[in-house]
Length: 118
Length: 112
Image (cartoon, rainbow over all chains, first blue to last red; front, side, top):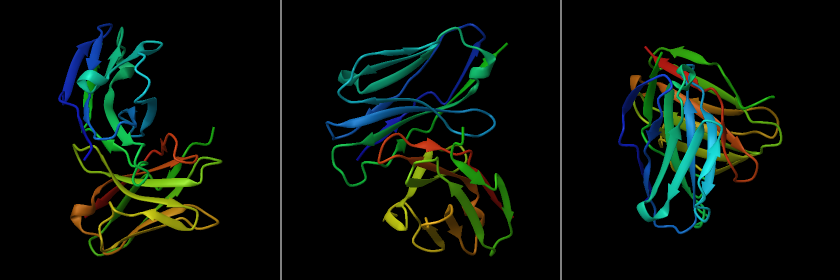
């Protein structure tokens, strides 16, 4: 069975600090997708990134970067020079793409609440 | 930029009433998913639909809950005879084929 663990329940940082949100996953499939979503205080879920299990290249998008390491089953998310607008709950999610049945289902972690203090 | 539209945003129902939650997918998306988010929890999969068909309802409670996605109109998640434990945020997502799912703003159901 698949599982996503976000061990950090809440994190507080001061504006302009860097912060890393951890995500560890479990799956028996060799083909799978990993996601990060952001849920700001307004409540909507905003898609940030999707990576497939064959692509271990790290990705950078502006102040956001993602570090995917299959060896440790981790897909960590770093925000550089954090801003108050980054305050949100961040969810890591997994879907198993190889099996067909149920491959569309996202399994979410419980989320990490990030507070950026001005 | 018409994303996934859910309405209402907030819904209050008394115990025993029915709740109807609506979801219009993004343009060009024919796959719809419903997830439930309980307080302090991540989202849990409920049901996956394509037009007029339920593909997977393995995450849906067996009683009182139903979902549909008619040929015309939005997808509907229906909860009959609501109880306090149904209070949650219900999110709809849509995708083209089985690609990345984009979520709506959610409907926050409160049962009083």
